[in-house]
Image 1 (tube, rainbow, N blue to C red):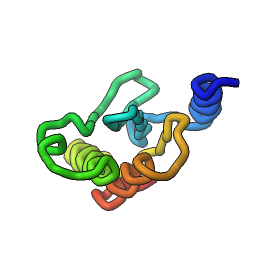
Image 2 (tube, rainbow, N blue to C red):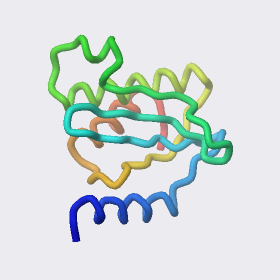
Image 3 (cartoon, rainbow, N blue to C red):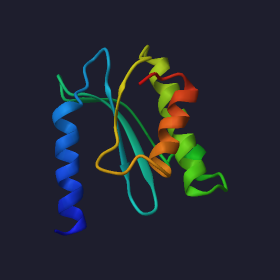
Image 4 (cartoon, rainbow, N blue to C red):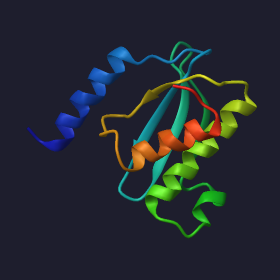
Length: 116
């Protein structure tokens, strides 16, 4: 079985259990080779509440490793969430293993004040 098919099966298995609501949105993380993206999603209404990525000007301008930028993305999404009054969310690792850059996003979001 190829890596992409295996990752897709893991993603579907996670999404069966993890559902975001308006009160507790889903913090979805997408990791590409070069960048990392995080979104707070309300699945009931099908809308993205807030988003942050390593392409944001404030984060992209910094000279840092990809893991350090991932932590900044987590802090940025937490700041946007608290600005909207969201303090609790559920974490969706998007089929990735919970280590490295994905874990850095989670740690940054926790330090920023999000609970999950």
